[in-house]
Length: 332
Image (tube, rainbow, N blue to C red; front, side, top):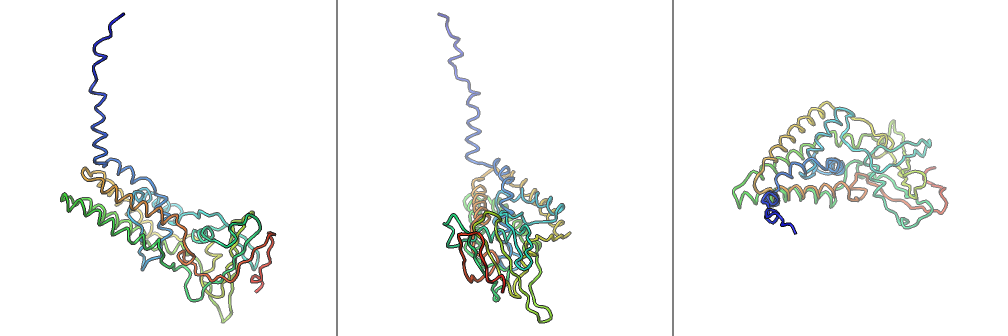
C-alpha cells in the first residue's frame, strides 16, 4: 500500500487567511455602507411623494437613509428629461367625468393612493359593485394634508438618528459619524424642500365660481372593468379640479434642474466621505437602517383621506349585486 505524502496532513495557513478579513468586516462593516447607499432610491422617492406638503413651509420629514444617493442620480435624469419629481402612480385607475362621460387614465400619484387606501363596509364581498359617494369639504383646502401617525413618526426618527450618532463621540471621541449624519439629514431635507414637489403633486386649477355662477364637478374614480369599488366625489365650488389632477400636468422648472444637479454632487461627496469610515461603522449602519425603515413605512403605509390631502365628507354608500348602479348625485 503506497504511503500518502506527509504534506497532505499538514494544514495550509492560506486556507484560513480569509477569516481575519471576515472577522474585521463584522467588527467594523465600513465597506458595506457605500454599497447600501446605492440601493432603495425608488423607496426614497415614494416616501417624499407621500409626505410632501404635510409639514409647515416646505419641510418634508423624510429621514436620511441608504437610498438617497441612488435617488439623487435618478432625480437628475428625471428633471433633465421629463422634468418630473413625483413618481408614477402605483395604483392604475381611470377617472370618469360624470357630466360628459369623458374617461381618462389617472396619472396622479395622490388620486392613485386615494383609491388604493379606500375602504368600504363591503370589501369582504366578492361580487357586485360598491359606490362610495363623497362631497368635498368646504372648510378644508384640498392639497393640505392633515398630519397623521406616519408624519409624526417620520419627525421623531430624525432626532433619534442624531442621538445615535452622538454615542461614538461621547464614548470614543469620534465625532465623524455625527458630522456625516447631520450632513445627510440636511441634504435629505433640502431635497424634499424643493417647491416643485408640492406644485407637481397638486397641479390643478381651483374649482371656483365665476361671475357668481355656481360650478360643480362630479367625478368617478375606479380601477376599471372588473373592479368592485368606485369612488364618486362631488365638488361644489370648492377644492381643486380633480380631472386636472388626474391629467398629471407637467411642471418644468430650471431652478429644480439646477438644484437637483447640485444636490447629486453633494450626495456623491457624502458617499465618498462615508466610504472613508474605518471605525465604529455599526453606528452609521444603525442610523441608515433606521432611516430605511422610516422610508419604507412612509412610502407604503395606508393613510386616511385627510392625511393624503383630500378632505371628503361621506354622504352615502351604495352596493348592488349588479354592476349598473344609479347614482342620484350624478343628476344633481
